[in-house]
Length: 141
Ligand SMILES: CC(C)(COP(=O)(O)OP(=O)(O)OC[C@H]1O[C@@H](n2cnc3c(N)ncnc32)[C@H](O)[C@@H]1OP(=O)(O)O)[C@@H](O)C(=O)NCCC(=O)NCCS
Image (cartoon, rainbow, N blue to C red; front, side, top):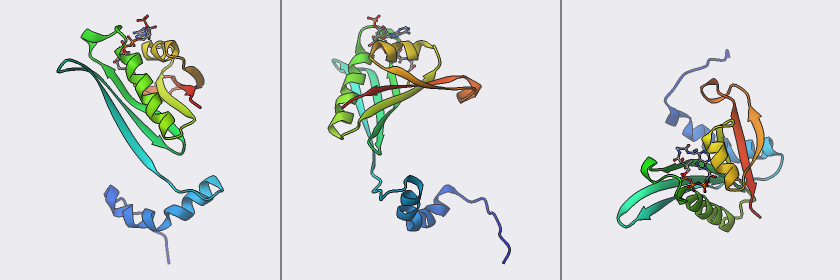
């Protein structure tokens, strides 16, 4: 029979992925894997006002900062650092050995993460929007 490739809505592959997930992960990592993925969000509040938020994604002993945003009017007052510290505490609780973030190379976000103890681990040339992006990381355990 000849092979055909069909473009389909995302969920059309759900059953196929589910059926093959365990074997595919074992094949990919070369050991038995139980995949468990979770997201956590923390807010920074001043009274009833939210001044910042951070969301991390945890999977495979790794925590990634998906988003961290502080209201421009409240920046440089420690909210970002406090949100990051809380995210690290959550990641630690779930036994993540490392937290990472992908940020524009040598931009303000990289300066923020470095001030919070993160180090550049790799630079991905011409990546997001064709910008060089730095993967910054902090070991937690
Ligand atoms: C990055 C961001 C979350 C930082 O939040 P923040 O509350 O201003 O950060 P903090 O006040 O806790 O800053 C901690 C330290 O980081 C460094 N820092 C923070 N913002 C910086 C900037 N724009 N330029 C250089 N260094 C910076 C400073 O050393 C700062 O300490 P200091 O103010 O005593 O000098 C905020 O600027 C933001 O929301 N930016 C837009 C979204 C973004 O880039 N998110 C990150 C990628 S997911």
